[in-house]
Length: 286
Image (cartoon, rainbow, N blue to C red; front, top):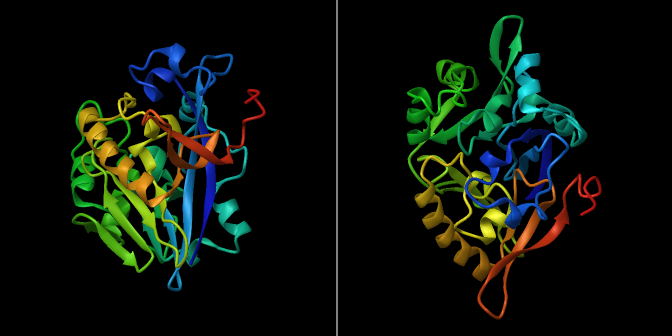
Protein backbone atom coordinates (compact mmCIF):
# COMPACT_ATOMS: atom_id res chain seq x y z
CA UNK A 1 0.00 0.00 0.00
CA UNK A 2 1.33 3.42 -0.92
CA UNK A 3 -0.07 6.89 -1.41
CA UNK A 4 0.97 10.17 -3.02
CA UNK A 5 -0.45 13.68 -3.10
CA UNK A 6 -1.26 14.62 -6.72
CA UNK A 7 -1.37 18.35 -7.61
CA UNK A 8 -4.26 19.20 -9.94
CA UNK A 9 -4.04 23.00 -9.99
CA UNK A 10 -4.53 26.08 -7.84
CA UNK A 11 -7.17 28.79 -7.55
CA UNK A 12 -7.07 32.26 -5.97
CA UNK A 13 -10.11 33.15 -3.91
CA UNK A 14 -11.51 36.00 -1.86
CA UNK A 15 -10.49 35.45 1.79
CA UNK A 16 -14.06 36.19 2.81
CA UNK A 17 -14.95 32.78 1.45
CA UNK A 18 -11.93 30.85 2.67
CA UNK A 19 -11.73 32.43 6.13
CA UNK A 20 -15.39 33.22 6.75
CA UNK A 21 -16.04 35.41 9.78
CA UNK A 22 -12.54 35.10 11.24
CA UNK A 23 -11.06 38.62 11.59
CA UNK A 24 -8.27 39.36 9.14
CA UNK A 25 -5.59 40.18 11.78
CA UNK A 26 -5.89 36.65 13.17
CA UNK A 27 -5.06 34.85 9.92
CA UNK A 28 -3.16 37.23 7.64
CA UNK A 29 0.30 36.22 8.90
CA UNK A 30 -0.50 32.55 8.28
CA UNK A 31 -2.47 32.87 5.04
CA UNK A 32 -1.00 35.79 3.04
CA UNK A 33 -2.77 37.42 0.12
CA UNK A 34 -1.54 38.48 -3.30
CA UNK A 35 -1.61 42.08 -4.65
CA UNK A 36 -5.25 41.55 -5.67
CA UNK A 37 -6.09 40.58 -2.08
CA UNK A 38 -6.76 36.97 -3.00
CA UNK A 39 -5.56 33.95 -1.05
CA UNK A 40 -4.48 30.69 -2.70
CA UNK A 41 -6.16 27.31 -2.54
CA UNK A 42 -4.44 24.22 -3.87
CA UNK A 43 -6.56 21.58 -5.58
CA UNK A 44 -4.74 18.40 -4.65
CA UNK A 45 -5.94 14.86 -5.19
CA UNK A 46 -4.73 11.74 -3.42
CA UNK A 47 -3.55 8.62 -5.23
CA UNK A 48 -3.64 5.38 -3.26
CA UNK A 49 -2.46 1.99 -4.49
CA UNK A 50 -3.98 -0.74 -2.33
CA UNK A 51 -4.81 -4.41 -2.90
CA UNK A 52 -3.95 -4.08 -6.58
CA UNK A 53 -6.31 -1.12 -7.04
CA UNK A 54 -5.41 2.39 -8.20
CA UNK A 55 -7.67 4.66 -6.16
CA UNK A 56 -7.98 8.39 -6.91
CA UNK A 57 -9.58 10.66 -4.34
CA UNK A 58 -11.04 13.85 -5.86
CA UNK A 59 -10.15 15.18 -9.30
CA UNK A 60 -9.74 18.95 -8.98
CA UNK A 61 -11.30 21.55 -11.21
CA UNK A 62 -10.69 19.75 -14.49
CA UNK A 63 -10.37 21.33 -17.91
CA UNK A 64 -13.94 22.14 -18.98
CA UNK A 65 -14.09 25.77 -17.80
CA UNK A 66 -14.01 28.48 -20.43
CA UNK A 67 -11.51 31.34 -20.29
CA UNK A 68 -13.87 33.64 -18.40
CA UNK A 69 -14.51 31.08 -15.67
CA UNK A 70 -10.81 30.27 -15.40
CA UNK A 71 -10.10 33.96 -14.94
CA UNK A 72 -12.73 34.34 -12.23
CA UNK A 73 -11.22 31.45 -10.34
CA UNK A 74 -7.64 32.50 -10.99
CA UNK A 75 -7.13 28.90 -12.07
CA UNK A 76 -3.55 27.89 -12.82
CA UNK A 77 -1.45 24.72 -12.97
CA UNK A 78 1.94 25.62 -11.47
CA UNK A 79 2.82 21.98 -10.77
CA UNK A 80 1.11 20.42 -13.77
CA UNK A 81 -2.36 19.02 -14.41
CA UNK A 82 -3.98 15.98 -12.86
CA UNK A 83 -3.32 13.78 -15.88
CA UNK A 84 0.27 15.01 -16.23
CA UNK A 85 0.98 14.18 -12.61
CA UNK A 86 -0.65 10.78 -12.83
CA UNK A 87 1.52 10.08 -15.85
CA UNK A 88 4.59 10.86 -13.75
CA UNK A 89 3.52 7.93 -11.58
CA UNK A 90 3.14 5.72 -14.64
CA UNK A 91 -0.64 5.90 -14.80
CA UNK A 92 -2.91 6.66 -17.75
CA UNK A 93 -6.63 7.40 -17.27
CA UNK A 94 -7.57 3.79 -18.03
CA UNK A 95 -5.38 2.58 -15.16
CA UNK A 96 -7.60 4.18 -12.49
CA UNK A 97 -9.94 1.62 -10.91
CA UNK A 98 -11.78 3.70 -8.31
CA UNK A 99 -12.53 7.42 -8.01
CA UNK A 100 -13.80 8.61 -4.62
CA UNK A 101 -15.49 12.01 -4.65
CA UNK A 102 -15.38 13.53 -1.16
CA UNK A 103 -18.24 15.74 -2.33
CA UNK A 104 -19.49 17.22 -5.59
CA UNK A 105 -18.39 20.85 -5.42
CA UNK A 106 -16.83 21.72 -8.75
CA UNK A 107 -13.30 22.24 -7.41
CA UNK A 108 -13.29 18.63 -6.17
CA UNK A 109 -14.95 16.74 -9.01
CA UNK A 110 -14.51 18.86 -12.15
CA UNK A 111 -11.89 16.43 -13.39
CA UNK A 112 -14.36 13.53 -13.27
CA UNK A 113 -15.26 14.27 -16.87
CA UNK A 114 -13.80 16.01 -19.91
CA UNK A 115 -15.03 17.49 -23.16
CA UNK A 116 -14.56 15.48 -26.33
CA UNK A 117 -15.85 17.81 -29.01
CA UNK A 118 -19.20 18.90 -27.59
CA UNK A 119 -19.72 15.67 -25.61
CA UNK A 120 -18.91 15.21 -21.92
CA UNK A 121 -17.09 11.93 -21.31
CA UNK A 122 -15.73 10.18 -18.19
CA UNK A 123 -12.07 11.04 -17.70
CA UNK A 124 -11.37 7.58 -16.30
CA UNK A 125 -13.17 5.16 -18.62
CA UNK A 126 -12.71 1.99 -16.53
CA UNK A 127 -13.22 3.52 -13.11
CA UNK A 128 -16.16 3.17 -10.76
CA UNK A 129 -16.93 6.52 -9.13
CA UNK A 130 -18.23 6.72 -5.54
CA UNK A 131 -20.04 9.49 -3.63
CA UNK A 132 -22.41 9.61 -0.69
CA UNK A 133 -26.08 9.23 -1.64
CA UNK A 134 -27.05 12.36 0.30
CA UNK A 135 -24.38 14.37 -1.51
CA UNK A 136 -25.66 13.22 -4.88
CA UNK A 137 -29.23 14.12 -3.89
CA UNK A 138 -28.18 17.64 -2.86
CA UNK A 139 -26.11 18.08 -6.02
CA UNK A 140 -28.88 16.80 -8.26
CA UNK A 141 -31.37 19.21 -6.65
CA UNK A 142 -29.29 22.31 -5.81
CA UNK A 143 -30.68 25.40 -4.14
CA UNK A 144 -30.00 29.05 -4.87
CA UNK A 145 -26.77 28.97 -2.89
CA UNK A 146 -25.28 25.74 -4.25
CA UNK A 147 -26.34 25.94 -7.89
CA UNK A 148 -23.10 27.67 -8.86
CA UNK A 149 -20.87 24.85 -7.61
CA UNK A 150 -22.96 21.71 -8.22
CA UNK A 151 -22.42 21.51 -11.97
CA UNK A 152 -24.31 18.61 -13.60
CA UNK A 153 -21.65 17.99 -16.23
CA UNK A 154 -19.29 16.82 -13.46
CA UNK A 155 -21.45 13.92 -12.24
CA UNK A 156 -24.65 13.37 -14.27
CA UNK A 157 -22.82 11.71 -17.22
CA UNK A 158 -21.34 9.20 -14.76
CA UNK A 159 -24.81 8.42 -13.40
CA UNK A 160 -26.10 7.98 -16.94
CA UNK A 161 -23.22 5.69 -17.92
CA UNK A 162 -23.66 3.49 -14.85
CA UNK A 163 -20.22 4.34 -13.47
CA UNK A 164 -21.47 6.20 -10.37
CA UNK A 165 -22.16 4.25 -7.17
CA UNK A 166 -23.93 5.89 -4.23
CA UNK A 167 -22.73 5.13 -0.70
CA UNK A 168 -24.75 4.86 2.51
CA UNK A 169 -22.37 6.07 5.22
CA UNK A 170 -18.84 5.00 6.16
CA UNK A 171 -17.41 2.53 3.66
CA UNK A 172 -14.39 0.20 3.51
CA UNK A 173 -12.84 0.00 0.06
CA UNK A 174 -9.84 -2.18 0.95
CA UNK A 175 -8.38 -3.28 4.31
CA UNK A 176 -6.30 -0.08 4.14
CA UNK A 177 -8.71 2.51 2.71
CA UNK A 178 -12.05 3.68 4.08
CA UNK A 179 -14.29 6.72 3.85
CA UNK A 180 -15.98 8.36 6.82
CA UNK A 181 -18.87 10.81 6.67
CA UNK A 182 -17.73 14.20 7.98
CA UNK A 183 -20.85 16.31 7.73
CA UNK A 184 -20.79 20.10 7.81
CA UNK A 185 -19.19 21.50 4.69
CA UNK A 186 -22.02 19.67 2.96
CA UNK A 187 -24.56 17.21 4.37
CA UNK A 188 -22.95 14.30 2.53
CA UNK A 189 -19.28 15.30 2.80
CA UNK A 190 -16.84 12.44 3.38
CA UNK A 191 -13.16 12.23 4.27
CA UNK A 192 -10.74 9.36 3.68
CA UNK A 193 -8.63 7.38 6.15
CA UNK A 194 -5.67 5.29 5.02
CA UNK A 195 -4.26 2.75 7.47
CA UNK A 196 -0.76 1.52 6.56
CA UNK A 197 0.48 -1.87 7.76
CA UNK A 198 2.85 -0.04 10.09
CA UNK A 199 2.64 3.48 11.41
CA UNK A 200 -0.11 5.99 12.10
CA UNK A 201 -3.21 6.47 9.95
CA UNK A 202 -3.36 9.07 7.20
CA UNK A 203 -6.38 11.40 7.26
CA UNK A 204 -7.33 13.15 4.01
CA UNK A 205 -9.68 15.78 5.40
CA UNK A 206 -10.92 17.39 2.19
CA UNK A 207 -13.15 20.32 3.21
CA UNK A 208 -13.63 19.23 6.78
CA UNK A 209 -10.67 21.60 7.15
CA UNK A 210 -9.56 23.42 4.03
CA UNK A 211 -6.41 24.78 5.70
CA UNK A 212 -4.40 23.48 8.65
CA UNK A 213 -5.61 26.48 10.65
CA UNK A 214 -9.18 25.31 10.23
CA UNK A 215 -8.44 21.99 11.91
CA UNK A 216 -6.49 23.48 14.80
CA UNK A 217 -9.27 25.96 15.59
CA UNK A 218 -12.68 24.32 15.52
CA UNK A 219 -14.55 27.64 15.49
CA UNK A 220 -12.82 28.73 12.27
CA UNK A 221 -15.05 27.67 9.38
CA UNK A 222 -15.28 28.81 5.80
CA UNK A 223 -18.17 30.76 4.34
CA UNK A 224 -18.62 27.83 1.95
CA UNK A 225 -19.85 25.46 4.70
CA UNK A 226 -23.58 24.86 4.39
CA UNK A 227 -23.80 23.66 8.00
CA UNK A 228 -21.09 25.57 9.88
CA UNK A 229 -22.24 24.49 13.36
CA UNK A 230 -22.19 20.88 12.19
CA UNK A 231 -18.65 21.43 10.86
CA UNK A 232 -17.57 22.54 14.33
CA UNK A 233 -19.10 19.48 15.96
CA UNK A 234 -17.53 17.16 13.40
CA UNK A 235 -14.09 18.74 13.75
CA UNK A 236 -14.25 18.46 17.53
CA UNK A 237 -14.86 14.72 17.24
CA UNK A 238 -12.09 14.11 14.72
CA UNK A 239 -9.61 16.37 16.48
CA UNK A 240 -9.57 14.01 19.43
CA UNK A 241 -9.16 10.97 17.18
CA UNK A 242 -6.36 12.61 15.17
CA UNK A 243 -4.46 13.61 18.30
CA UNK A 244 -4.79 10.25 20.03
CA UNK A 245 -3.86 8.25 16.92
CA UNK A 246 -1.04 10.66 15.91
CA UNK A 247 -2.58 10.70 12.46
CA UNK A 248 -0.81 12.25 9.48
CA UNK A 249 -3.16 15.00 8.33
CA UNK A 250 -3.33 15.78 4.61
CA UNK A 251 -4.77 19.20 3.75
CA UNK A 252 -6.16 19.35 0.25
CA UNK A 253 -6.29 23.13 -0.17
CA UNK A 254 -3.38 24.36 1.98
CA UNK A 255 -0.50 25.75 -0.08
CA UNK A 256 1.77 26.08 2.96
CA UNK A 257 1.08 22.99 5.07
CA UNK A 258 0.21 20.01 2.94
CA UNK A 259 0.90 17.42 5.62
CA UNK A 260 0.89 17.86 9.37
CA UNK A 261 0.20 16.37 12.76
CA UNK A 262 -2.02 17.70 15.53
CA UNK A 263 -0.14 18.64 18.71
CA UNK A 264 -1.27 20.15 22.01
CA UNK A 265 0.49 22.67 24.25
CA UNK A 266 0.52 22.81 28.04
CA UNK A 267 -2.71 24.85 28.01
CA UNK A 268 -4.50 22.23 25.95
CA UNK A 269 -4.49 24.37 22.78
CA UNK A 270 -4.21 22.41 19.53
CA UNK A 271 -1.97 23.40 16.65
CA UNK A 272 -0.78 21.65 13.50
CA UNK A 273 2.88 20.71 13.33
CA UNK A 274 3.98 20.93 9.71
CA UNK A 275 5.38 17.73 8.23
CA UNK A 276 5.67 18.96 4.66
CA UNK A 277 5.77 22.51 3.38
CA UNK A 278 3.57 23.65 0.57
CA UNK A 279 4.68 24.70 -2.90
CA UNK A 280 4.54 28.50 -2.64
CA UNK A 281 5.98 29.14 0.82
CA UNK A 282 8.95 31.02 -0.60
CA UNK A 283 6.74 33.31 -2.69
CA UNK A 284 5.37 34.99 0.41
CA UNK A 285 8.46 34.61 2.58
CA UNK A 286 7.00 31.97 4.93
